[in-house]
Image 1 (spheres, rainbow, N blue to C red):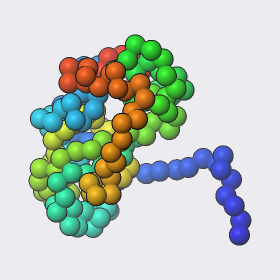
Image 2 (spheres, rainbow, N blue to C red; image 1 turned 120 degrees about the vertical axis):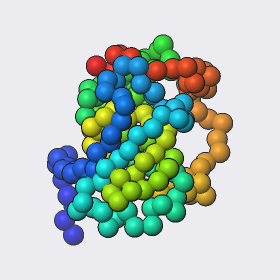
Image 3 (tube, rainbow, N blue to C red; image 1 turned 90 degrees about the vertical axis):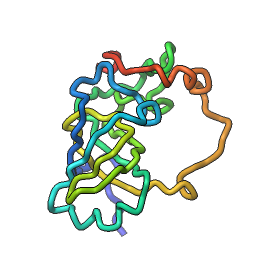
Length: 165
């Protein structure tokens, strides 16, 4: 068996696009949990429509996106802290490969459009994948949350700014 080159480029193609009232990274919510009323939609491209079958049976979805307006950094000062951290110890959008993860609440499905609440995505964000959120599979109880322990109380009032540019 041939082992693929782990340094080779990986090519992904969008399956859809986010429609959002947020057109600038500055001033938008930094996590979906802090924006439960922020609405948005995902238009899934027609060639992927069959993949939406049975999706309306889920209240929450995990959406993987390409953070198309983010930069790539290895160390950042995250929105919920004033100290620098390695990007892999944060949820900052400025990261290698610029992959975003949002957990959204599905409101309704109209043809190839998913309407949702809990929006922390920019208008025009390419969607790479959608997965059902299943608490029995996805929730882990832990008290070990690193530097986030101090920053979580700031989350409800925290909005993004231009520090990731």
